[in-house]
Length: 130
Image 1 (spheres, helix red, strand yellow):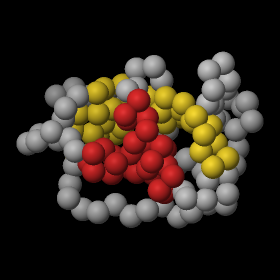
Image 2: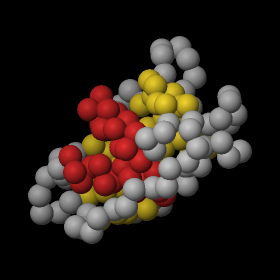
Image 3: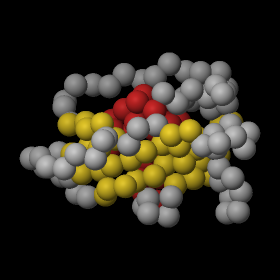
């Protein structure tokens, strides 16, 4: 087992509640090149479900995104991720890097969705706060 100064999350069957909806916001999202598009789309789906009043778009190439998902570990039973954000070209803020692992089975889409909800919660991502 390795420790990298990250928060570890072990899967449990307990349900995760949806976050409180914030005022309508518009955000451009990008994922790092190392992040497979399926995970990026799944994260976008979670973000839309958690905040249905937000407008989320994908940052066009050459533009500066406001949200960025970075996966540091990708495996059939482990995932590491970090969320970064910024407002109006300010410096990037970053949430903690979270790791998720499952010991007795492969990760399912449902498990990854719950992990992404926790990533949003632990990042203390508060739109409009500076």
